[in-house]
Length: 251
Length: 265
Image 1 (cartoon, rainbow over the protein chains, first blue to last red):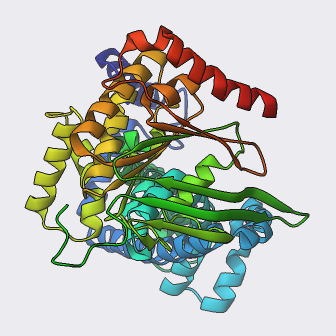
Image 2 (image 1 turned 180 degrees about the horizontal axis):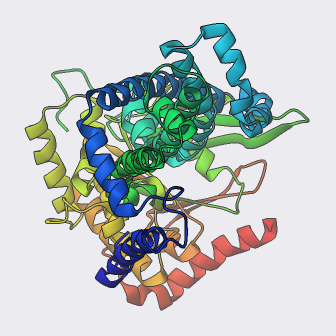
């Protein structure tokens, strides 16, 4: 997707304007600056926070939880999704059930995760995994369905082994859909882990944000919000960049 | 072909023999007879076209010749041996337009059959280049399918079918998705490639004009259960030209096929 220079400039302008409005609202006192510290103060605080060893440690904790949950949920979910999609009977049985499961807000299960795993690493990873796996399964079934029968017939007519068919037809056919799935899964995963940290935790950036909120440390709270937003957007854009590079595969 | 010493092969490379072939599709409610007692001989190097109304089983028959599907009864041999599974050394297959892999370049698509057999990169590339040259796509190897026109895509498909140099080329409505002009040009191109390679070609189409224009022989099939209702020899001289389309000989052959098909419609 190519967008013109004008469109890009307009996007930057909107972001700058939002920060400017934020700054003005706070500086002029239209909104109580104790409730909404100014944008500039927030960014300075963000710089300070990133220098702090404790905050860095929290970021590492969160990152490792997110990475672990993601590394477990994606392959497991992809495998389940693949098996379901490849078997028409399974697909027919399981699909509506998956939609049911997917529609339930995952947060209501959080207390159960604490009871089972206690408060700590495995609870976050478990909940992150649980928040992510349904979307991975559903996206994978969609990805498998995007594989064209014609392509499979071609592979068969040239004597491809099942392994060759998997790596030379299924994988490249599914890749564009899988990348999109990866991107969306990460949104769910990050939400799950941070929610788990905010709800009950001793460390992690989600826990920090919750604590800053409870203690009315608005500058730190907003700095944390900006920090997480930037990390999430960066990951999202990275995958989207790869996606656009293979977008013509869909045709 | 040079016979080895005193051993003469029973059937020369490229011969296709279809004997009393039947195909029954079992569905939950009933058995559908797709093909009924079809017999057919294709001599090496001939250009044979299968025509018939939709559902007459012409594509099914082609898929069975390719080893992609097994007949319920009867036998099919290619170059003298049955074909229980696809064998790209004996049979190349060209499908409809959507069969190229969009994530591979033209030359990678042509190399695909060789890559499956772990042929070395250099040899693969060289063979793909030759095949692309043969179909008139020299210099287009690095393009992806979405950068090629419909006609060019089908040239790539033909190159892929020929890259392992099989004696038989099976083509399942390869030009169905093309516009009229491109279709005519591709017909001429195919005849040129066929003349240059001497392959046995079995070609499935809906178009009667295309059938008569391309073929040495036209096999006309009836709708379910698919049977052969006529077998025409097209004695028009080669190379075929556009002017022949309006000639009497051409017209009477096409009318004869049309009468069979109209009867069954």
